[in-house]
Length: 374
Image 1 (cartoon, one colour):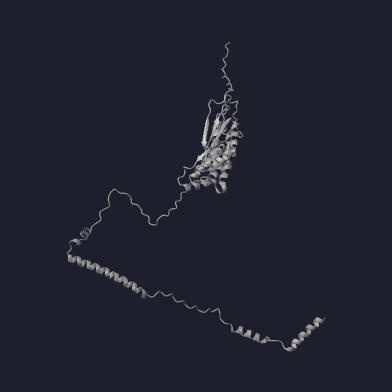
Image 2 (cartoon, rainbow, N blue to C red; image 1 turned 180 degrees about the vertical axis):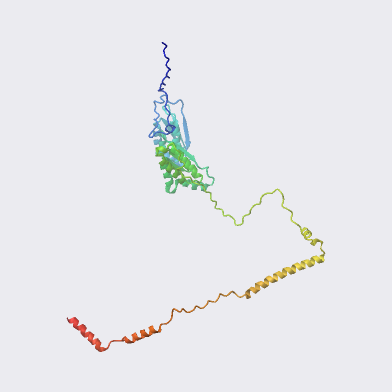
């Protein structure tokens, strides 16, 4: 008996444990809340650096007294990272140098930024924050952005605002310390805040008021709190301001309108002979020409006389009088009733006019006295 062949079943797919599941890109790009980079320790670079590095910067004369006082604090802050700091008051310079014990290769760059900020009038309490891992600095040069000196001072004052209110609002929104000094703006804070500070400062020097950028930063700050809107575009929420350049120049009353350019020259004007040829006067005799001129003069004189006469006659033209008002007819309803008047006169005669006689007065007084006694 032949065996029946059964169809082969497909082998079940084995799950690969090493295969990664697809992850949303927005989650990969977003930084987790409360995430902080681990600090760089001596265990990460136990052998140290191969060569010494150094940076130097000059400082103005008015910063000499302050730097002389706070220099021991600067040396103490840099000695924690094994960086040597020197102050040369004769030359007017500050120098930072790595030592054999220095293990962090990036600390020399932070030390360079520290002495740069101290030279730009930033106080030591704020400048020393640059040695932290999550802090950075940005020195924005604004001196060459505006040519006119008065305009430059006015726009630089806009960054500060009345009594420093604009600068304080910008510091709160960006979590940065900002120092406006001379031709530069120094800022210390996180990288995201420094980016916003640079944008606001450069826009202000381009004659865009900082209040517009501050308003946009306030809206962004509120939108960042919503986790659903993190991966979406915020353009529909941000305000859009139109730039209006209103010219103060007054427009002239009589404008000269330029004609369209044509390569052909204008037609030559007709001469007196051409006009006479066209009208036929050229072929007339001199006596006929004189007679024609006299006739033209007489016609003009007659027109002038008639105009003068019309003006004189205007004084004798009487003005238009208003039409006379027609007298109104007496209304028939207001007729006098004689009978009614007679009856009124009779009633008036019956009434006793004047004072009462003496006897009646005495009687009334006696009656009043009796009432009082009772």
